Length: 428
Image (cartoon, rainbow, N blue to C red; front, top):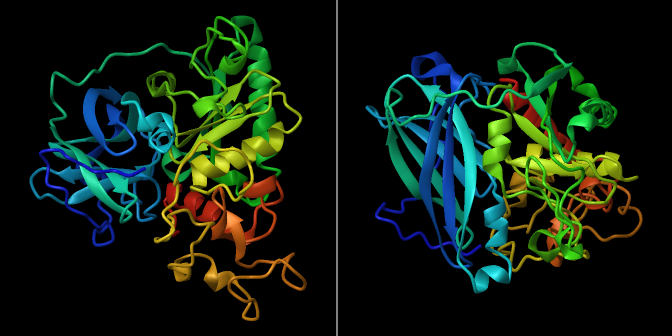
């Protein structure tokens, strides 16, 4: 993505590190302000436009860790107090549009995609900002800045469809837990019992997988039973199209195994009344495939033989911001990483700023980069190949969940623990 921001706004780089955490109840109520917005552009530029604001009855996010200091993702939503200009909330995320901008299609077309984020509902006027990362310098620049009055008549306060919500696991108040939500996709009215059983099975899989096995008490788990008119999902490359609740499908960007949905509005409509920190869309099909975008959603199929590891892998992307560590599989991206800068993902490095990655975890005798040979090849190191490139990007171990479904390496495990702590309002 080569982003050149050309809006009326002055494109100033901002740093989040100088802001202190705020007192939640001074600024916010325990409910959500949902922000639907469009991202439009092509391979060389993008812009943002507000589509809708909604008041929704639940806030499941942190009430202490309000400022996101991970510096992950391709975008930030920032909330400033209107009177003092103080940053009072921030959260980073990725989008499917961001990935589309790196494809061949984006070199010849202009498109617009709907996106959605939620922030705590403000008690008084705020400045709402959407900022995007420019891969030329890895800094964030504002795309959209909007004053929001919480009393505005233009904020939608209506109820949406109340789908069946099943509590799979409850360990305590949402402000101190990670709320994981499974959404049914491609399950008909007669298949809802199967969905609930599948969601329970996936929950069990997660908590049998290190490092999640030691953090089960930090999670609440919910299942939202969306009803689709037809079973399954689109397989556009084979001429198969299904009428489903979330409009998902394979062949995203022309890649047969890449299963996603661009329909963020339907996803956010589905979770409007359920505590939600992380979303996994469970698709009722046996085909292999999935996808995951940081702080957006992860998606995978229910019944493929590799379902358990695909689920955990894709959740690694969406929940902990982990990068793919493989480098030989088909992808649709062009110049996805700028090798002159350190990538933001915690489990890959260009060695530009390796001190900020897993250097502190390495044994002193391990060379950097690390040769893929004895005595190093089975341990933690800095092995070339990752992030879809065989040269110039390095991964922590030869094998990991983020490459080939091996157990999570120490660098990935630490990133997962840090995200759980952040969402549970603990030190991270």
